[in-house]
Structures are given as structure tokens and as C-alpha cells.
Amino acid sequence: KGSLYVVATPIGNIDDLSFRAIKTLQQVSLILAEDTRHSQRLMTHYDIRTQMMSLHEHNEEARIEQIANKLDDGQSVALISDAGTPLISDPGFKLVRELRQREYAISPIPGASALICALSVAGLATDSFSFWGFLPSKTNARKERYKELSEHKETLVFYESSHRIADSLNDLVDVFGERHVVIARELTKNFETILSGPASIVLEQVNNDSNQQKGEFVVMVEGLSKANEGLSTEATSIMTQLLTELP
Ligand code: SAM
Image (cartoon, rainbow, N blue to C red; front, side, top):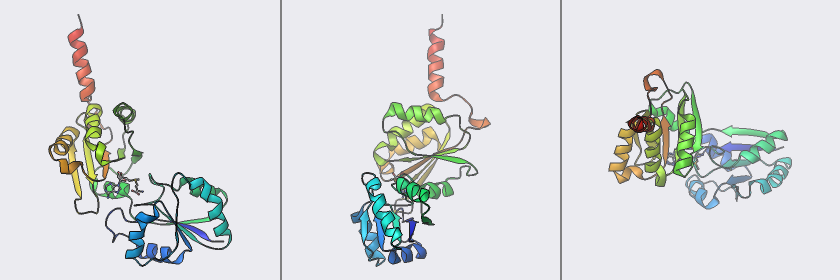
């Protein structure tokens, strides 16, 4: 039987593709790509001429039998996403779960993931952290998510899109007060920027410079510790308001 290779691709800098990833992509009989047109650039750059087929959230289930048949035929298949490691806030989970249940060989070809890249340079604790993928897009739901996590002791990691970064940081300040925050923007690309400091200072830097609102972001928040157990700004303002209303 053939194997499924889950292959990480670059998150920005096209040179971040391993030799093994290139060899694998050249040698398999089919590459499953989230967006075949997007990935064509990478294939052209590395002279990879393998046939590509799309695998995205809308057709993932329908593709499973087709892929299992190929593997049964002794052909190997690679799975890639638009950037970084497949399955990490990207398609592939249903395919991998099903093929693993059926005991097919599935092997990782490791490489970039924005989550790990960001943590490796943030200067926040990495002995324990939790990853929450994309934050909800609406303020109320986002604040709820932040509140649910506000007493976690481990470093919190989120993905955020450029059009929501300012609003998202604003909500973060409301819930976490002055908690230490690091945002990693455009990692491995020309405008790579890491901003680090108390949440309100990072928010100010982002608000004051519209360039800091462009691109792709990983948002990281220091876990709750003795030092930052104080009340959030929102809690403080509610307390102040309540106190003024007391008889
Ligand atoms: N599978 C990818 C991975 O392993 O990192 C993540 C895919 S997810 C659809 C895309 C999100 O990842 C972006 O919105 C951003 O939050 C984060 N991201 C991807 N590339 C990034 C980069 N170069 N710098 C900062 N964040 C990035």
C-alpha cells in the first residue's frame, strides 16, 4: 500500500521548504492541495511536476474514498495546505482521522508552522501553552473566549487576521488589563515584526501605525501568574461604577 505524507510548506519565505519535502512532493503520484492555483508557485519554484488535486473543507469528505483507492493501488499521496503545516487551522483532519482508523501509513514531513515559529521568538513561557486557532470574529464572542481563558496559567496562542487585529487587541485589553502580550506579524516575510509589552502599549503601537495592522498575525498572551492576578481594566471600571452607585 502507498503512504499519505503530510507535508509542511513555507509560511512566507519560499526557501523554508526542506529537502525531504521537495523530494517527497516530486516522488508521490498525487499532491492534495488546499488551493492548487496558490500552490502552483511553490511547485514551479522547486520544479515539482506532480499532479495536484484540490482538498478543502467543502470536498474533503467526498475525496476520502478516492484517496484510499489510490493508496490501495500502491500509490503514495502528499497533503499540503496554502501555508505551514496542514491540519493546523487548515484542512486535512477528516482525511487523516479516517485513514488512521483504517490503518493506512501516514507520515509527517515537518516544517514551518506559524504557531511554533511565533512561540520560538516571543520570549513567553513555552513549557506549557495552549493554542486556540482563530478567534471568533464578533466582539462579544471574542471577549467571551478571552474571559474563558483569562485564568489559564499557560501561555495562550491565537491566530488573527489583519482586518480584525486592532479590534481584537482592544477586546484583549478590556479582558486581560495590563497582561503581557506578544504579537508576531508577517513571520519569515519582508515586514516581519514582533511587538511585545503590556497589552495596552501593544494596542497603542498597532493603533498608531496602520502598517502594523497589515498582514498575518499570531497573538500570544502570558498565562496568569501571581504577578498579573490583578483585576482587568473592565473589572476595575465595573467596580468603580458600582462603588459610585452604592448608597
Ligand atoms: N497551517 C498554518 C500553520 O501551520 O501555521 C496556519 C494556517 S491559518 C489558515 C493562517 C493563519 O496563520 C493566519 O491568519 C495567521 O494568523 C497565521 N499565520 C500564517 N502565516 C503567518 C506568518 N507568516 N506570520 C504570522 N502569522 C501567520
